[in-house]
Image (cartoon, rainbow, N blue to C red; front, side, top):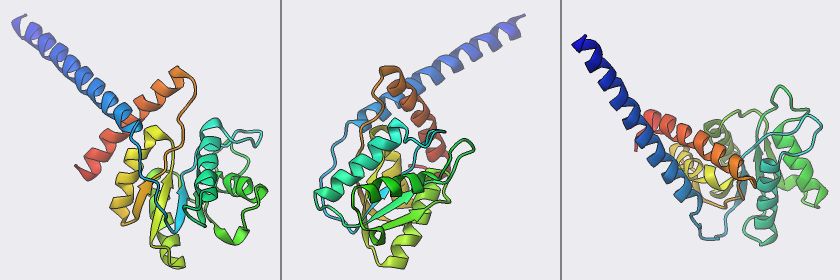
Length: 198
């Protein structure tokens, strides 16, 4: 009986400790999502993919990312793009293709758009983008992704050896979507820390 009680107390304490740690991590993700990055010139803009809707429309997340990337281009911060993202099961085209089409429709020269249409997660985005940079003599980059995702994206650029700074895109509009995005990103931070450490 005493052993059972001790086990319950241990489990309760473990749950409380996990909840506190997760809340702290969530807070860290949120604080980092508000960070401002210096707007500097670079050779290329790397845009990380997000969902393409089944009807071919860009999801809000993807639209915000590619719109922010085009904004950086219009400001003269970089003259070329690497758009990334493979094709999901319910996506009619790759995320890279959808973003390339967006840029082409706004007059960007096709010669200045490089596509990584194979990557399925952020580390693959960065590894494949690094290969494209090396093939084309690009030395540094602006990373465009959602604000809540930017910190980990910049961490991963260091893992693959890309010299980069961030150009954050707005996150989700709705409060519950912003919370869900940060909860998921908190778990992704745990995975990053387990794989790469601090």
